[in-house]
Length: 379
Image 1 (cartoon, rainbow, N blue to C red):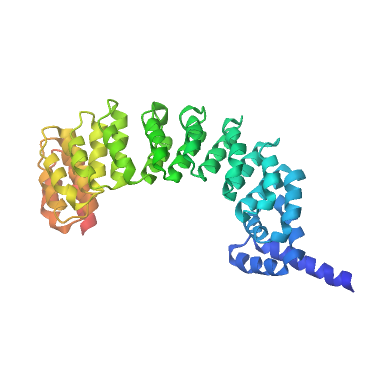
Image 2 (spheres, one colour):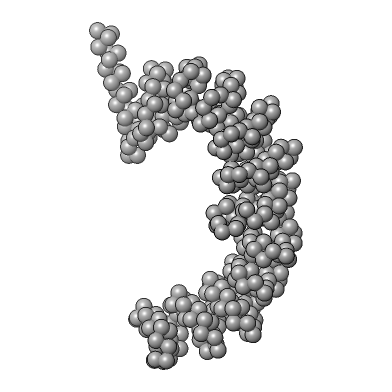
């Protein structure tokens, strides 16, 4: 009767693997499979070929089964490319150094998806001896491999490798690879990586007519923390307005109060996008920025006043509603409209009378309608 018992257990294993696809049963199924141990491993490895939601759970379970390593290594060497990649991801989780030779072979193998995942696994291993094997992947024909190689190499946080990663950051033809290099250098949080990131900030390929790459770059610079303050302050005076703009945004995200005074001056930049970025960044400092933005509301330049009105509403401060009510009397319609939009966001009952006056003024139908809409929301 052993064959019958064996068949019953196999059916139970398959059932539990299927239950991994359901969030409500995933944890309990995982516990059951881990308890079954070596008996479940072959079925879990076979299931790596599936495309279901249970794949990540299967990989996590196998990463906990050290006894499955020999068969996983065999699959890494000769399995289907899809399985090889998933096995590499398992070793990235388990950090089982017995897989190092196989991963090194996979990193220079035929399939780029496998090379990419093997690179990440090697980076996760934490063994610096793999760095010389990872560096050539920065010049791989496939950008996915170059991208993952950047992330893998950066995990070792070795300044001697930063120049190699920077070659991808500054020269790679694929935007995705450059973004990966920026993330990689940022995640090191090493001051030696900062000059490369600042060079990228001054490179128009990072921000010309595109928003996503510069967002990744600014996030990487932000990870540098306090050491980024002085370089960003210098960039705030760059001859290129777009560089000044993004330096202003980065200083706001950095949150260093030393930037308040410099951003206060940048509010008056001749390039409106720079002034707007500076005003928005000042708003992130809260109450300490109110007086500076209040002064900007009195600037002769209407765009500066409009930027100040837009920024003030982002600050939680009792003074803001009164300042925006005053801005309703501004000589520029754009400032008036921005102040009205701000009052609509604040929804402060103390502004009721001022809003009624705007609503009653039929000379500007758009502002009148906007004021009425805000009043309806306040009722």
